[in-house]
Length: 369
Image (cartoon, rainbow, N blue to C red; front, side, top):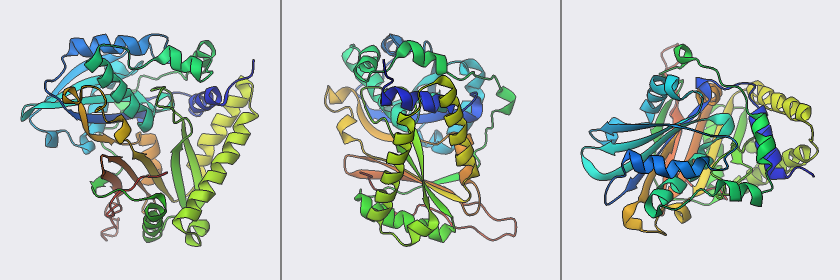
């Protein structure tokens, strides 16, 4: 029986990294407006559905986090929490119920999951499916059914899981970059990439690196499917935003054609090593990640008063952020919720010579088609 493309996408993602450690865990936070917060028992009952028929995850570490206000749990603190808790969930992942003393009607879902097994898009849908499951007390994940619909061999997929290393002492509490946020109105793909082109040249980056999902199905809230699509600086310089989009779409098609020819375990391992090797070897990158407009999944379709998405925040694992930390590198990404775009971007640090480096991401965010 031939392996489906969806199955191959997940196998390649898992063989991209030979092992998993703290540098590859992906933190993400969804914040909802609720009539009452859900307790940890409700989280636990809902997560049982996630593990049913799940070939990648069989358990998680559930915790409760309480802060005075949302300002006390900013994006910049996610990595410190990841490092602090890592010893307790390194061989699975963490799910946290986040509440705030200043507003009893805010409910946060915070997760830390390994990057080879999950990414920001999948984390977003994991949060949404979890919230839906808690609201309705019915399975909002549908893991086994979705795997079957996508033709993914769950019994074989588990064989591609990379080993996990316990490295609490190596879990960095500090991020290699700082972030700035710029909320604004969504824009179409052309104008958005035109702005990204300007940011790339102001930064002096040599390559635009598009971080794009290749398995967009919201029916499967698990499995990393992120692609790294390079648009060389000379192509960016002579292209409009739409032409940049056309270039990376052609690059994406080339990647998928190469993936379609891979069959054996050895071929997946070889392709995975080449993938991470090419990523590390690409110099001076400006990474662009756009999740688009997610309003169709904002929780409002079922009992909106019991959970309406207000905000989604995440940052890449430190293994990825490391390539964006140079003076000529950077990262800008965005998500749009109900006509409001949230743009998060890296800010260059002060150079050794004492010059203040440029901040990236002052433009409003947009949604990529």
